[in-house]
Image 1 (tube, rainbow, N blue to C red):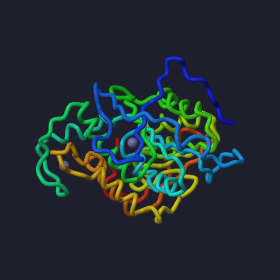
Image 2 (cartoon, rainbow, N blue to C red):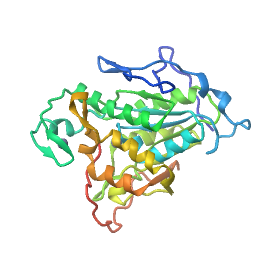
Image 3 (cartoon, rainbow, N blue to C red):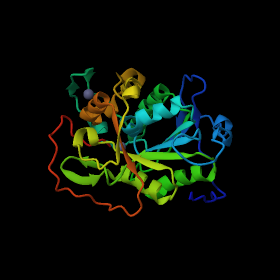
Image 4 (cartoon, helix red, strand yellow):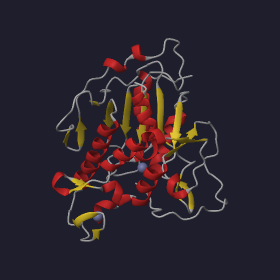
Length: 314
Ligand SMILES: [Zn+2]
Ligand SMILES: [Zn+2]
């Protein structure tokens, strides 16, 4: 059964950018807080749900994808997102952090060059402006995917993302009490971040643990690193060939180098091999929410062949 909790009285519904109409300046960033047009309700309300009220994969209720960092949603879930869009479901993306603790911030000022973009790294960015640049990539990708709306949180900037923070956003969606709601997000313990270690990315695990802990029935996780680790313990491998062109297009938002427009290809700098591999493979890897599944995995399996770019996306 779904768990529905009342929101605290002080709660202010978060801001959603809806993509019904083109926008020139996607949201505004002030004091590190992203504000977008607030238009809750509308076409995504209960009227879209199937009449039997059951929650299952083919409903037309809203589907919400939780990403720990900008790029997780596209790397791991773009096929699922595009499918849901094509089915006419209201599709929302919940971004938990700006991803501003990435090592790429220090790389962008090291004077080095890369074969895939002109110029050298000569861009000193503050943590805030770096995070804003990552959100810019994310917003571009979301427009390319054609999602209904996004909500950008800024959790975990100076510390790790916590499941309690993710739970705030999960509870927001559960409190809306919409029929046919589906919740998706980054997988946790089933998705080692490196081929050589069983540890998941802690922020990804925070998302997944919050989704599982909600007790909501329609929850799935997606492995992010399988294309470079070969170690995801997925329950289902989904062929997303039908959506691969669109997925590659959205990945392109994370590969755009145009510093004059605040675009630094940050996700591609972060995890070149991963982006290239997921764009080539057209598979997504689903993990089911199974309570009490062991949170550590056996790391004695033989390692898969090393693939270019086994780098930690963060
Ligand atoms: Zn991530
Ligand atoms: Zn570079």
